[in-house]
Length: 337
Image (cartoon, rainbow, N blue to C red; front, top):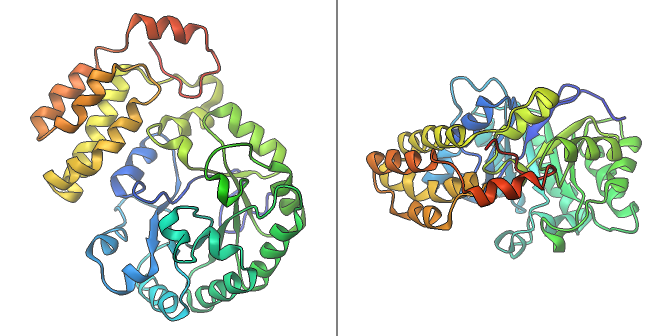
């Protein structure tokens, strides 16, 4: 098993940089449930260089964040160089270069996962970051072929030669976004081939998924992404395993209330509530809350409305959902009812 500590300790459980999600309030929520190794949102290098106010706010680090990484996406060398110089003025443990994002708005600019498909261009861009960074630099990539591990291994080899201190591999192709099988055998070959931390990513929604990915990839370091959306309890589930108690309706309501209040404090009332809508719906997703209650999320206009809404959540789920849950002990999003 690849257990080279490097930029992470052995058995590190890492929250991925999630665009539009992993801001300070989101990270605080994850940390409340045991997360230690977290990243900012994915940051556009150009927006950072040109002083976009929203982007600059993404650099905010909480007083109690003992470990925090930052991730940037881009392709133009001068922009990347300037972005790194700005990041050097702040305090982060790792600077990650995104070579895995499949979002159309990123791909259209020949960035993220699209840039990774041109190995020479990707490595040259990475080297600009590595040569100018005052902290260790890593990269997050996707596999480049489902049948042949060689293209992925060649990209990693060149990134290592360019100074990569670690590589996170999402085991799906760009075109598959976040669905379909995770090709763990390719990640395993990378873990066995390189003497730097290889972090496995993809398809982890609970403890069983975590163990499966860990065993099949031979990686002791695992990055969580979409499986943690609306489910910060996944960290305590993985950490405590047998002793884990799934959240109740009260737990979910309390976490939503605290998370949204922190977003209001961070962004202001109007923007905080607007951004929080998708966050609240993520917490409710797959947990049997009635659709009519989900429709009320957009109507929350102030702190008083938020309290009324979370009180309704505390009433729990329907009997139909509770009966359904008894037939599905392996459900991805566990909840106590």
